[in-house]
Image 1: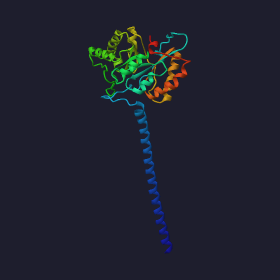
Image 2: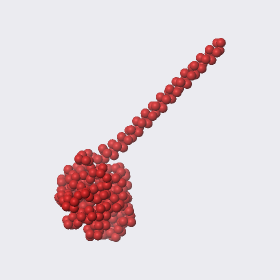
Image 3: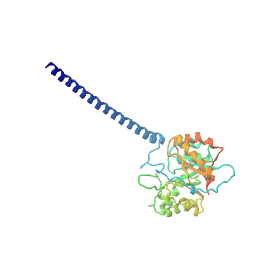
Image 4: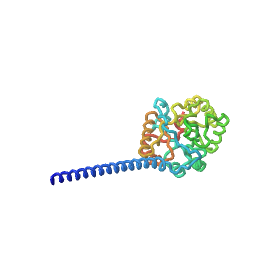
Length: 308
């Protein structure tokens, strides 16, 4: 009888221990799940913060917002690069255009003062365009009008003064003239966004006629592989070319330096190359850190020197 009671007691203890072990296991599994969720939220927060807040350097808000480059621009295909350009028998030419000038006061000023021959493309209605464009002109810099054109999809806002396909030809001309008045020292034009507009032959012909009337050149930012800008400009005997590489789609100094290396290699293969960057701290730092290492391989020039 005593043995039977002891056996039952042991079973109760064992059962209680088993129940406690299950409770502890469930609790630990819950804690692990909470920890994994917390790490995931922190990682997402980190990426969002450094990709948006840190990278933008205090971009002022506009009604409807503004996107500073269209997503997934097409790569420049090597077959489209003309290998005929070598003004001198010495170094290949590299032209870097800094787009979106006029929205970033401090970074824009630092970019203007870099000891590298860069070209600067100003958004016509940006808050710092008038001051920075005048400073760039006084310093003898190459200046372009960064003309906002209609992109694909309504969620991408090209900003104030953009030309749209729905505009009449008169309104398109009027918008172009007003934009040019805000960048009076422009030597040429390149498109801001415009993945939809630059695919339209009639609209681009009208725009290029206006550009030609002011004896300006045209650089195709090449935000769509179907752009007709380069071909039309050549047919109209307007000096033109299109960019090969965007430098700063990935906003890390190492990645931008890697893109500069690709640009240099492209120039070495073809005699010249055009890159486009933007007023980001990482772009500024990368040009400061990396461009100097290529002075014996390429010559940095204003973009007008690599146009045909």
